Length: 185
Image (cartoon, rainbow, N blue to C red):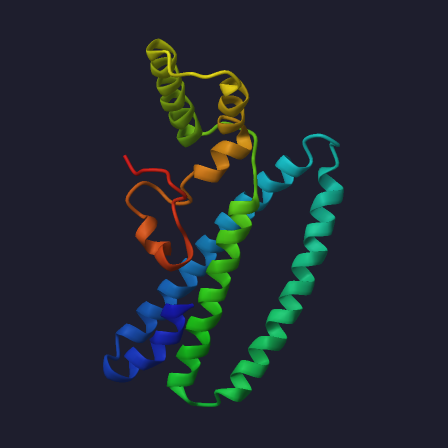
């Protein structure tokens, strides 16, 4: 959306750039839609795992998406009316809504606990297993430590420390996201 907003501004100064930015913005929007569809399918599968009700979950999610889209369109109409032709205000509203969108997505992903393994979780589990073995060898494991170790290595424990972005990219979400004590390796 940023490219689509910038296209008219840049196009006024450099004639060839308008079409390039408008097309790049459209391609980026399409790629985002593909990624959203793949994510939606994975989440539907996750939530339907125990009851095997994927169709019901997909229907409810579709209804929620329709409602959110309608609210978004109303907010868009209000924002367009309020910022009528004022470029600075348009960008301010865009940035504010984008920040709110990213904040909400980070919180939603943090709340989600998926109990399948991926490369990051396997790497963390193996590292924690090595740490636990070292503690056992040193004799520093106390009574009752088993329950803490199991809780730490449960899907919820792993999700708490899991990075949302690949290693080295966490700076992108810096104001809204803390790595929660996990170190980058």
